[in-house]
Image (cartoon, rainbow, N blue to C red):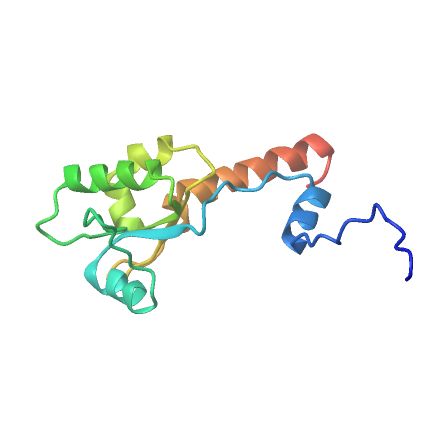
Length: 153
């Protein structure tokens, strides 16, 4: 009969590489349960394109993650959808057509949380104008301020 020698070794554990990367980068992870959604506020063609790509979601309460904006859509409906999408915990990105964002510019400009991120996108009938993108303006101001503060131009 052979004697067994007890060891205090525990089985090796596996840690996802993403957690090591997050620890090395010193950044907090975004708290999500399983996955996060992308929401859309745009014209029918843009929304349908993203729905065909698999972005659409309808939950058990029949709430969608998109709003199709047409000539019958009121500014109040757009405002309500924007407020809903920016407060839902299961949404990570809100994509909004720039011409729609211009209708509720005061809301888009006053939004300052990192999650969900707001992305202004072009539509079929309305081209993208970087001069009206408030997020792009914030980024430009941030980098121009840092460049001046550090002595770079």
